[in-house]
Each structure stands twice: as structure tokens, then as C-alpha cells.
Length: 568
Image (cartoon, rainbow, N blue to C red; front, side, top):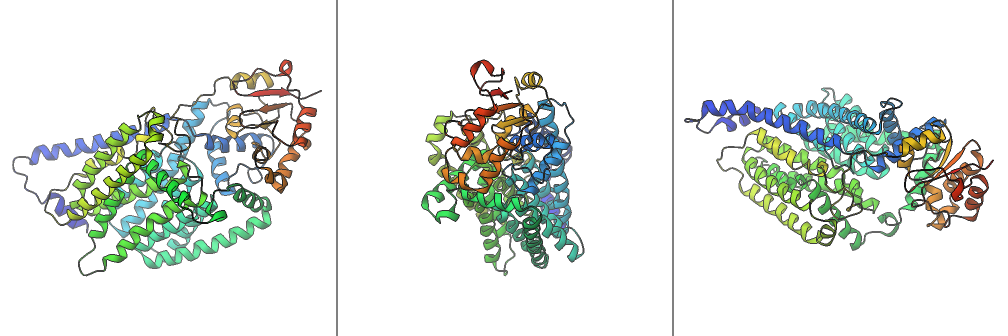
């Protein structure tokens, strides 16, 4: 196969253009490499999103108060907490906010680079070295320059380990080792967040497309490890299963509570349209899939390849649909899968290269323009934009399908790298929105900013224990320790507007922090997140008796934050 691609790339005559073309090739690759470095650098410019700093802040501040990462609650499973604790440990004490963000970004990027190497090793054996390199680079790039609201979310981590599962299952020569490593990585896609279990199925499906035996054995390993993990968690970390059950009941919009509804399907389609505008490589993924299906040799059943291509889209979207909230990060796996499919088609289907390049350039330019529109316009015109991108995706797929087999000089690989970068980097550019029209659509990509928190930390003492009634990103910015294993008291906060939460064991355990943590010298309260007036009488009484929140007693604090000293 490698020889065939090589011949197709050089079959056209070079009359009068050979020397200049050979000189341009290194220039094209150097330019593509510089563009990739610039794209990665741009991703480092943006701040970590608040969900990620929520997790980091909770782990760090509870850890400083003596709470183990195994016992802290940050609304994320322990496997995800362990990863975030590892990244947090990379940041030296006293580092500035910008430095902390940069180190965390780079730590995650190095993990992606390692996964990309494993993907290359696996696909090199199953496809060829050239295709493996392009697909691994595309997958790694899509993860590193993913939209800021995707980056380091549990759904993003699940996409990362799903890619690892594909490479790990295929790379070893010995079947048993591939099954063990691939199955373990697929299991991690479940462990980091239960709602992302479809991504483990997606990884195994992609392995199945290349090696059925390895896919079957890896699936068995994954199921075995999942059962072991479940019983081990119930025995050694009983709070994990309790939190999981209580968390599931909090998501009232999930189909697990009310079944399939057209309203949810509509929101899923709108969310898919949103992620397509943010990462326009998604719009040309159907064309890439069409090229791969068309590539099936005559005489072999094409329906199998078609079924795999269609089935792959299901798990990538199932996680977002199952969670029922349709936040952008729930679609984190979609651009990664799209980039991998695009790169596979570009590497293996020379006749599809030019249609893919042209269609990718068109949708990238359109996305760049649309992402600069005012938030109100984006919100009001999302249906028209979604339909336009859907039409472009269908048209690109038809053109790519019909172009198969035609004699044409394929586009150079460096041009493909440029196109892929353009179709993945847009959401990380300055002034790009976090979402096109959905939740957080009015917020944009920002740089780290912790103005005022350093001064507050010095005022109350950096090692002074506190109780937080705030979203976890406040913990991250302030950094003072807390002895409560609910560093951001989600259950108390949810109890202010979801009354049934007050009857859960998680709520009761969270409430004990207010009475048992006698070391806290200050209350750090974010009124916009936690309404004391809507909380239970017991919560209001304890807070009033322990802390003085009268205006004269309050400690000067950043805007939106109230800091109250403990009563003497």
C-alpha cells in the first residue's frame, strides 16, 4: 500500500517544474510545522476553563487541609481526580496564575504527545507508516488545540484514552499484550466519567475495523476490568457509588429519567451544529468517511465499511445525548474523531485529497467569519447556520464520492496539514466564543486573570483554613486550605433550589462540614453562586452563629466575593 501511494503521488509529469517543485517541498513542510507550532502556542494563550479550575481548586485546597484525593468531592470520579492531582503536582508552590495555567497545559500536551506516539505505532502496523504518522498527528493536534471548553474536561480525557486504546490494542505484536493494554485504555474511558462509556465502544469499533480478533479480546479485557473496578470501588470507596447515584438524580434532563424526546434530539442537533462551527473539520468528516468507503476494493461488500462509518458517529454523540445538558464539552470527542477520519482519508485516498482540501478551506473560512458575529446574532441564527453546514457536509461527501477513481494529481500532504490546522484551531483564537449559540455562548476565550486574590490571600494569611461557599474556581484563585472534603459545597448549593437534594446522604455529609470543621477562620462566600436566603434554616443558623457577615466585619475582597471572619 505504501508503494501504491508513492506512485500515485509522483505519477504526473514534471516537465519544466521538477527542480522548483522539489525545492518547494521542504519549504511547504517547514511552513506546515511552523503553523502547527503556532497553533499549539495559541492554545497555550487561553486560560483553563472554569470547570477545570473547579477540579484543580477543589483538589488543591482540600489537599492542603488534609483531605486525600481519594476522598475529596469535585463532582468527578476518582480516576479523573487522580489525573488532575498529577497535573496539579507539576505546578510549583508560589507559581503565578499564568505560570500555573501554562504548566498544566504543557503537562496535558505531553500526555497527548505520548498518546499520539502510541497511535502511530499501532496504525503503522495496521495501515502504513505514512498514514499512521498523519493520523496520529491529526489526532494529537485536535486534542491539543481543542476548544478551550473541551480541554481537560472528563469528556476530553475520555477521548484521549479512547485514542490511546486504539493505538495500544494494535501496536504490540503479541495479541495478549494488545488486548491487555487496549482493554485497559478503553476501560479508562469509563473510569474517568461513567457517561463517556460510549467512547470505549467507539475505540473498540475502530480497532474492529482493522483487526477483529484484537477488538474482541480487548473488549473482554475492558469488561473484566470494569467489573473489578466496580466492586473494588464499592468496597474501598463507598462514597464514590453514593455520589454517582446522587449525581445521576441531579441531571433531571437526562433520557435515563424520561426516555427519548424530540426536544432532546433537537438540542443534540443544535449542539452538533455548534461544535461544527467551532471545529469545522467536523463538517468534512462525512466526506472523508465517504472516501474511505469508496476505497473498498471492487468485489468486497461495501456495506460493512458503510456500517462502521455510520456506527462510529453514534458513540461520539451518545455521551452528549445521554447527559441531556448539551454543554459543548460533552461533544469533546467529535472533533477528535473527525480529525482522525479526515487524516485517514487524506493519507489513503489520493483522489479525495483535493475535494477534502477545498471543502475544508471553505468551511474554515465560513466558521472564522461566523465566530466573529455578535452573540445575539449567533443565538438567533443557529438553525440557519446548522442547516447550512449540514448542506455543505452533504455536498462535500457527494463530490468526494464522485471524484473517486479520477486521474488527478493529489494535493501535497503539507497542504493537508495546513487545512487541518485551519479547521481545528479557530476556537482557540483571541475573541473566539466558548460556544456558538449554546450555554456560555456570550463568553469568550480569555487569558488567566486572578486580580485581587493575591491581596486577599495576604490579608487573611495564605495558610489560614477557610470554608468555601463558592464555585471551585474561586478555590483555585484563592488557594487557602479547607478541611471539608466538599471544597465547593455542591450539595448545599443544589439544595437551595432542588429541595429533594436535602434528603440525600451526600447533602447530610456536606452539611457536617459546617458543624465539624471548627478550624476555619473565615467564610469565603460567592453570593451569585450560593444563596443563603434560599438555603435551609439549619444552614442559615449555623452560618450566622459561626461567621460575622455584617458589613463592618467583612474583609475587603474581589468583586463578587464576601469574606466573613469567624465569630470569637
